[in-house]
Length: 340
Image 1: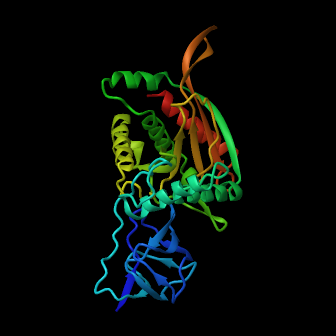
Image 2: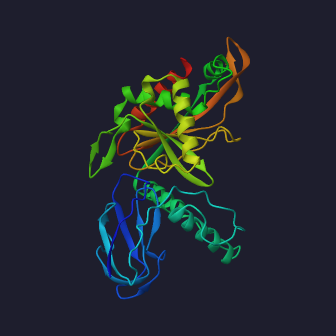
Image 3: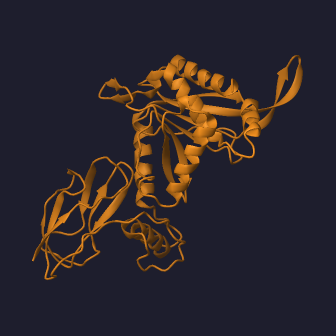
């Protein structure tokens, strides 16, 4: 019998899915669960598996095509009476390199990660396999670095107002990123050009006021989008951020969908890194890199005192803004942080 194989819902993004390559040619024998083709979303690359054992009779899409969930992608000739549609479950975290190599729970995502772990073991110490998500993030950031003329501005801010706000909120803990997301959101209201993207020699305004926060989860980079933080308190933003990060780390596919943001912040303050420069996340025009909060000797009222300060580094796309505009934007962020 002929089985129409339709593109499963990958539950990682709302954007179009692109066919990267076919792994099986029409006329070849296939098995249920065998990878048929490789696709790419704006977040990750992954393999799509066969829903039946038989022969690939026809490929209904070609390399480079944009497809959507539910679209016919292949016809399979099978002797099976019926084939159970594949519904990819929630992504599962990758196991250690020494874990068994049989198919773990978690479907397509877990299988791809398990394959990467197995490849890393088999290839020896000279190679380290990347997951599909890591490859996609790496490619996107490489394109950003090559195509967007980055320039960087650095300044420090008085962190004492944030420390006082965190102390006043005790025993509840306000995430540091909540303050920075709030400040960026408010500054974007006054400097809206920072939220534009460069496209074919013109600027396109952002369709959202959300601010993204970069999150590392087991070596993979995600961006959590906070809904317009400019009008919210730091405590409200912190609660929203913690909830979304918890769902992401629990494997919630909805939480792992790529959300557009006007701008992203990335924070290494939990480490000993004092300052760093970040690569802009396309199609955004800027990203704010945050170092650790640390006591710093400053001159105040003619004397030297210790003050907790934090270094902020703004990476900006010179096609969208010039240095003066970006400097004024960074100054506004600092003003927001210091006026808490």
